[in-house]
Image (cartoon, rainbow, N blue to C red; front, side):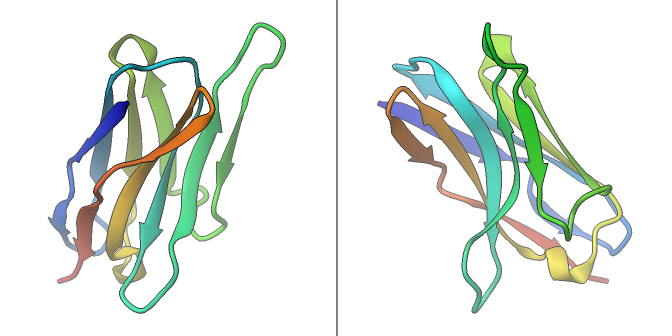
Length: 120
């Protein structure tokens, strides 16, 4: 069983920045993917960014939603089993609950979500 704990959300003004963190703990087997999704009120959950972790035979890759490309950056700290989402130039339309997502072993795990509100 893997537990994901998100932190770093909150209220920020348009144009501001936030960094989300997601720490994975528990019985962690090999992690294949770490990423972030979000769900705005009245909308479906959508991919924000994800990273396919490099392996001995694959250099890995990173995907971003078009709406955040160039503004958001995903990164990992392998030693801490933590994934980050640096969010810059935030816009009101980035307001949503952000969910951490990890694929490890043959299972997919979700965090409980953390609210990000972009408003003046």
